[in-house]
Amino acid sequence: MMDRGNFSYDSGASGPADDNEPKPPDRRSADRYRAVCRIARVRRSDDLGLWRVRNISDAGLMLAADVPVTVGEQIEIALSESITVAGTIVWAEGGRCGVAFSEKIDAETTLRRLAEEQLAEGYRALRLTVASEAVLILREGARPIDLVDISQSGAGFLYHREIEPGTMLDLLLPHGDLRRQALVRWSRGQRGGLWFTQPLDRADLESIARFQG
Image (cartoon, rainbow, N blue to C red; front, top):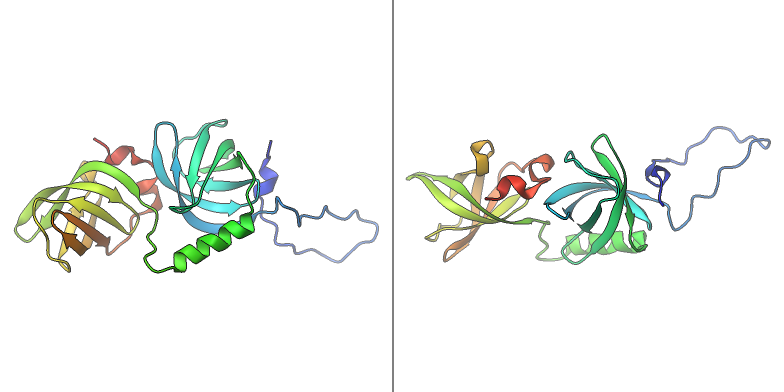
């Protein structure tokens, strides 16, 4: 079982050498973590959300999220649309949790692939597929729409008519307590895509529950 030591930060700095002092173990192993700061899509048995990855090793990773988690819980983590890993939560404390992978990975190669994907043409940030009603606030008034997906930077929607790309509007998300100014990036038939002028906070998307029903 992986313990929390795999997720601790160690800058490698040290004081003057002392020949009588035992040397620390060599951490240049397959389990050496790598600090990262990226969003992953986490699937649980009864929920789905976007959580932040704080560091990763061949054996596991650390996630940051304020939703309650349970030690022993099995989850699936999409680092991108093409790279997914599975694991078990082995510790949880203060809005962070450690995950031991079901199968070890090559963390260095995985991070390189993620970086290449992010630089590729047509790259899209991870988003949540949703089925929820929201409200567009246009010049002519408020109109209900159906959300089909959402990310920190934008959302996809269905509407009964095409909205001209470049239109600026406000989007009122479910429960009426989350509002964003948005630009219509594209519109084809009844489908469209929005770009938020101010990204959603990570915590807004940690659980899909608020966007359901």
